[in-house]
Image (tube, rainbow, N blue to C red):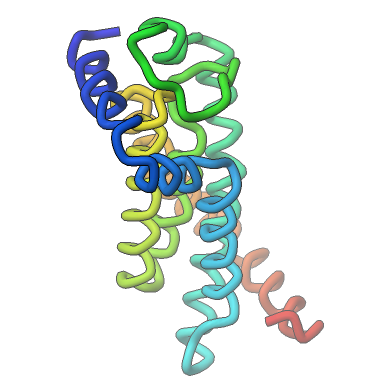
Amino acid sequence: MNSFDSALVLWLNGLSGNVRVIDDLLRVVASDYLMPLLFSIAMVGLWFAGRNAAERRRFQVATLVGISSIGISNLAVFAINSLWFRPRPFVDLGNDLNLLFYQATDSSFPANPVAIGFAAGAAAWLASRRLGIWLLAGALLYGISRIYAGVFYPTDIAGGAAVGVLVVLGTLRLKDLLEPAVSLFIRVVRGLSLA
């Protein structure tokens, strides 16, 4: 751990405990439920969006890339965690933090929730810049709220963001290799009236 990480966590977390409404709001944002639900709703909405057949197909391909990237990001984070364990800030900094969240026991680096958020946002960016910006901003807010809550370091957030974006880039390559299967899948799903 470097001093920049510690200083930023201590400063941002030091803002907690002063205004209960802000603490409660950021506790909800940092939760395991709100942001993943919003990312999921955005992916479902993207799947069904589009004004014409070409735009709908572009959105559906982006949705498939996003969903695949979310799964692959989870695997990538698991692999990194298997190779290297980084203690959470509340373990390293102890009583200096005002912990607003439960004490997770997995590795702090990279931030898995942020990797998932950035995977969804980067994939959405492929089809809709506006939606992509909103999801990427949401993923960043998700990460900052987790620093505020005392469960991640800033470099954990940066690492999670990098994993999410890099996985999307790799998934795009994989999509190109699997292109006939992707088109077939979309046609089958449309035939079942699920798209």
